[in-house]
Amino acid sequence: MVFHVPTKSFNFTVPMTNSPPLVCICMPTYNSEKTIGSTLESILNQTYSNFIVKISDNASTDRTLEIIRSYQDPRISIFTSDKNIGGEGNFNRCIELSEGEYTAIFHSDDIYDPRMLQEQVSFMEKEPSAGAVFTEARVIDEADKRIGYIKLPKISTHESSSLYGFETLFKAVLKHSNFFICPSFMVRTSVYKHEVVCWKGEQFRSSADLDVWLRILSKNKIGHIAKPLIHYRLSNLQGSASIRKGVEEADFFLVINHYLAKKEVQELLGKHDGLNYRDLVRRDHVMRAINLFLSGREQESGNLLGKVFSWEMFQRSCQSKKGVITLIGALYLKFILFFKLRRFGAVSLDAIKSRFNK
Image (cartoon, rainbow, N blue to C red; front, side, top):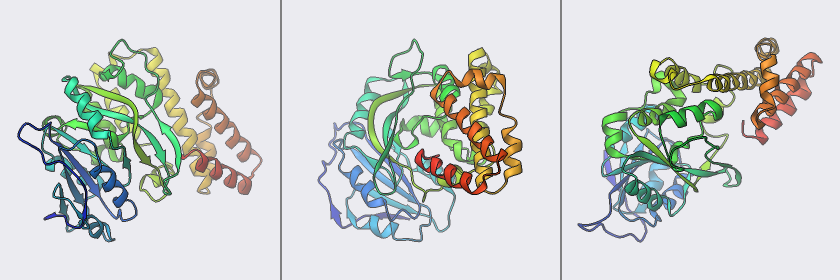
């Protein structure tokens, strides 16, 4: 069902015949009453004028739809579901709803800089080989407090400093894990419609977005704007909070192992890429061992931690800040397990995880 929204009004420019490219902002929502107002206001106050907003609501049971309908702006349309179709299912519906030259699937709990669309459209118009572009981000918590910053890691490449191909970014992911900020992406609508088509949630679960960016990279370059044009929310109320407490191998490896199995990808990689991959595996083992300990499964925690320590780990830990942190975390957990410091260990590890949003 489609609703055209009434009540709060914003100034905007009606697109003319020779208007700039149309941007379709698709927003999947589900029980977003606490944040949807701030998100919508940040979008409706963009400096770029030629855009529409399509909201795909996933059978919300709170006041999400009521709040959206309170905004009087003909650019907004609402599409509702009678039943919950899952997160990835809702993203797929956003792709189906997309139109215009560019599509941005924005999240309903983030806040967007007024220049977001202007900067991204300008970049895409200047770079015809770019299938998509993403930005950096300031990280905020549930109270809108700034708690961090996400930027593109240092990348060794001969490419343009703001436009990258598959090899460069895949190698960077092997070294730094997933640094792409999903709700900051703007994608050519034709790429979403004809190349991506859908998010493969059943295969890649919570990391289906990483697979989307790698699929785009297989045929196009992806651009990066080195500005924090989004306030990206990390909250204990999000579904991703439970993922950070996971004790199974991270979904990230479902995607990475899928691509590493491809011969054409293997031919791009060298020895250092393999070492970087093993660093990520060790980091995942340590985090899962900590989560097992916090869930009261000390024996399983110790067994998993036993797979981490090696001469290679000690050598590699000195080569990066994350390596040092991984080693310290592993040694600290080993100390707690050895001396059976259950209560002290649980309190201290939980505090450390909260401090670093892990």
